[in-house]
Image (cartoon, rainbow, N blue to C red):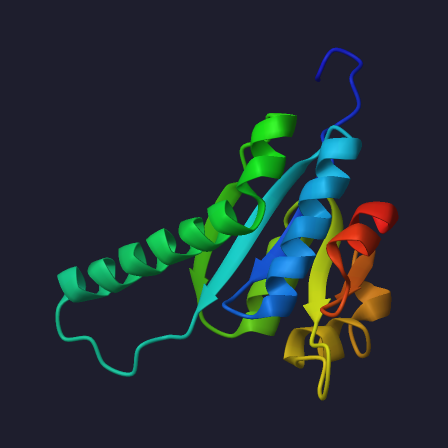
Length: 158
């Protein structure tokens, strides 16, 4: 037990190199700061077709982790610093939909899945999947953050 305290809310953000993922991350960071929550960043690496040596695979994964840490730090480092939030970065390899679903289903502290939707065109495969087929089967809400939100509007909404 946690001594009568409410469990910490964790906002799960799936991150990649896209602008909309950064907007979703900034939204989640602000929500976490305002609700005494935490942020978990899930980065999904496409499996390598062929890696002959395990050391090469480990180097690829470490490079990916450093890149994601850089994205997180540049996108929301100041928000985390001000709120005292230390985000957890989880790196997984494989099918993104399956990884996200499985990750959420094994956790009871996830308050919301936070996804960024592209400002134009297709919203992206995760948004399409989790706002459609799987939306009623998740144990938490899905927050879809428009990639076109300005900083001021993001602050107002979070």
